[in-house]
Length: 407
Image 1 (cartoon, helix red, strand yellow):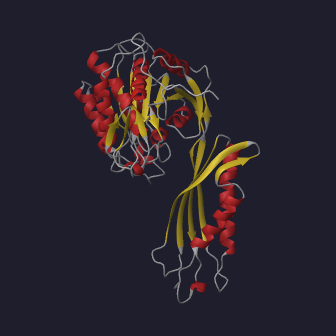
Image 2: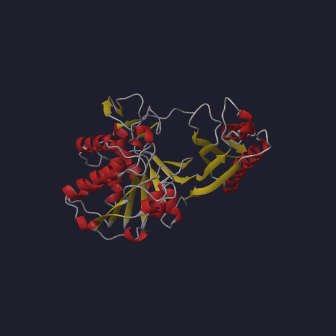
């Protein structure tokens, strides 16, 4: 396979005018603001304040109540989606630009620093938060360039969504009536700015409670029912049968992961309760259901096998909650063609891709607003080695400005 050439700065002929220093300062500041899912208020307010400083009318900026409908935060969260509707100076269908504002918990304490052509976290034990503060900065830069320079543009909607990392909740529950009926939707997330993502996988969350029976682990362990033993047996079966991690069944593939396990308070007490949070992903809906069914069957079987000295068994609560459905856009969809045109205009060759991760585009598309996703220069998201490629982020800003101005 031929090695991919590194992305370089665009030529003067194809470059879109951009205040690069301001754009980089903006993304660096955004990445330093804490904002895990459900606690995005500080970042949302910072973005809103920048819009108002640049001349946006307060009446055009709002937040919705998406956070109050979130099944993954029990209807909690500090704030809903931030929405800015900008009246057009040109005729044409409304265009909408989207990016999620929340970060993963690993970003807590991040201190962004520039090292050569990258921005990284100064601490080795934190992720950067480029996912997706880079996308947020791309949207904000486009909006501010238009406001400050008075650039002509069609009607525009900018939306910074919340709680994307816990199930795309902002996009799933956004107030459609506030969006102004956009004709094309463009989402920023993920990697290189030449990526044009036209489809993504689907996912289902699995919420599990395993109830055993407590007893003294030193005096009478045989009288207890260990929730840990039940879970261990189930996991061993799932791993052995190929249902955990990368899942390949019948010529199709998916994934599953156990991300949260909580239980126990002392080593001298048989664990009587264990809480598990897991998920199954697959583009194929049938495989996704088989993954969920395999988890449920393994956990129920393990629960029936673990007994105490009196023959008593524990019990299981297993709940599968759809997070988002897979989708694939028609390659002639107007938003796809417009995205590819903008990518070419900054000197790049568009690369169509299907994502194995969930995107706000999943729910936007499912709700009748087909959305294409573009990259913002992010590398190694959700890892301590996360970084942001400076040139690529600036290219993403140029792509967004082209799309926002209808070029």
